[in-house]
Length: 410
Image 1 (cartoon, rainbow, N blue to C red):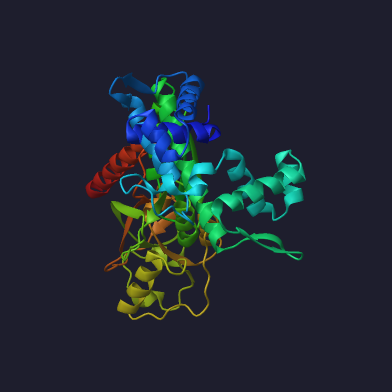
Image 2 (image 1 turned 120 degrees about the vertical axis):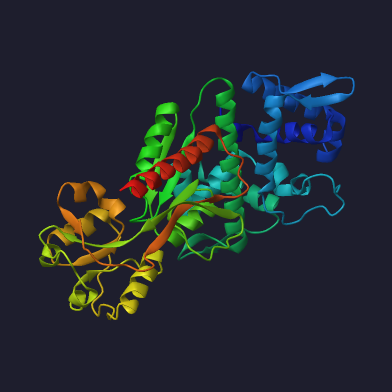
């Protein structure tokens, strides 16, 4: 069962949990007490669980549902409040005076996301399997609830989200993320550990750590679905903020200050100069940086910690930056270029440990001053972690510690 299909019932249950009774919840939501009571009973029937302990003193959520309703309350709180009722009680969350949060249904979210993707009511109707008039009416309702237009309309470009529309879209994504996590917790209460985790990885920085961590977690949680995607730093950070992914793992930026996100160090990674095993420079037992004056490089991606290290090291060693730039964002392409040329790359030996052991690549015997970078993870700071996410974070820390210990012994 997906909680997003029962937003009306969830609102009533959250209000009861916050106020302590159906009477006060009805007053807060400007509904009749009977409507609130029916909504709570309908939700209990849908989930086949008792949500509230009832007594003469009021209604208190059960311990399990107390945390679940906290997640649902947070979900509604993500809705942008275009026209809040200024007379609302200060001790109540702002969503209880937000027309959008009080009225939005799953069909509104579904239509909004489809229109943002297609830019056409007709195409969205076909994709959703409903009539064009139904799509149009749902959009009219949504803009009424939002108290603003959400799309810029033109014959040439169709529908395009305006600034407030983008804000509503982000609020809906964050709301869905909270409710999906609540679904996972609800399933876990029935002994079904599952859910989905999406991890964004930055190139040339994860190495063997993440595969080991993922394998361990999926062994402990067989029902867990894990998706790993690659991307650039800026793109992944935006996806993280929009709740499209759950965490980013890779090289951390030293100056990090993004509201709503936090980063955590896992280990310190050192870079080295790598070449194919039969590279002319690989035959030397001793090597000075002056021997690399005319070397061809595969440079790190711009605006990355590796690029910063690359420029600093070459500058300290008195070498000019390459005049011809070749940058690669693919590990397979990097290895192929190294194998088929006399190019060098400044990268982490950790990334190609298996290939080095197999005799395909070597680390050149060069002194690299200050060639370290920090590898870690970034996630949303205000997320209530699911069991799967808690396990993944703990396992990443454990594996990172094991790899650091291995490196210290080598």
